[in-house]
Image (cartoon, rainbow, N blue to C red; front, side, top):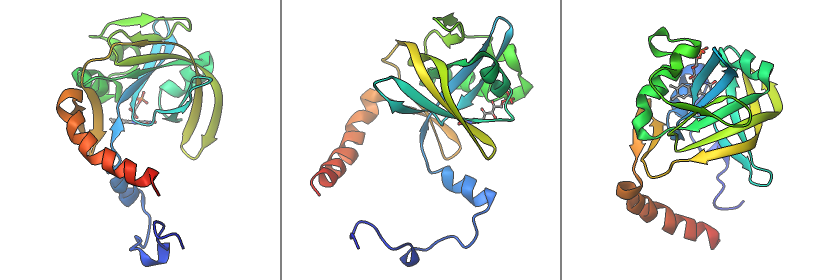
Length: 197
Ligand SMILES: Cc1cc2nc3c(=O)[nH]c(=O)nc-3n(C[C@H](O)[C@H](O)[C@H](O)COP(=O)(O)O)c2cc1C
C-alpha cells in the first residue's frame, strides 16, 4: 500500500456519523465567503455561501451548492441566472444579512450596499473582491441540496482588500500582506515535497 494512504481500518473512525458530528467536523474546513444573488427588479433574494468553487477555466465555469429550502432556489430556477460575489473582510454585515440574520428576507437583504448589473441583470455587489455574472448550465439535485454549475458570462474584480473566510463557526479576515508570508512558509515546503514524490 502507498505509504501516504493509510488503511482506513488503522485510523480512528467515528463509530456513528450523525448530523451533529458531521457538521462539527465540517467546521474544520476553512471556506471563502460569497453571496449568491438571484432575481430581477424587486423580486430578489440571495444567500451567504461557502460552497463556491471553480470548475473549469475554459470555459469559465463554477460550482455552488444550494439548499433547496432556501428562498434563492426557486428564483434561481425561474430565471436561470445568478451572481456570485466574493466578499472582502469589509463585508461581514453583508454576509450576516444574506444568511437571514434578524429575519431579513428577499430584497431587504440588499439594503446598505451598492449593486450593479451586467448581461444577465442579476444584482452584483459593486465592491466584491470578484463578482461573477452566471447562467445556469447544469443542476444536480441530491439530498437536501442542488449542485449548480454556472457558466460565467462576465466578471468584475476589485482586489486589494483582505478576503472574508469562515472557519470554526467564525468570520476571519485573510489579509494578503499580513498572512501571505506565513501562508507561504506553511504551503511552499509542503507543496514542493508533494510535487517531488
Ligand atoms: C458562512 C455561511 C456559509 C453558508 N454556506 C451555505 C452554502 O454553501 N449553501 C447553502 O445552501 N447554505 C449556506 N449557508 C446558509 C444560507 O446562507 C442560509 O440558509 C440562507 O441564507 C437562508 O436563506 P432563506 O432565508 O432565504 O431561505 C451558509 C451560511 C453561512 C452563515
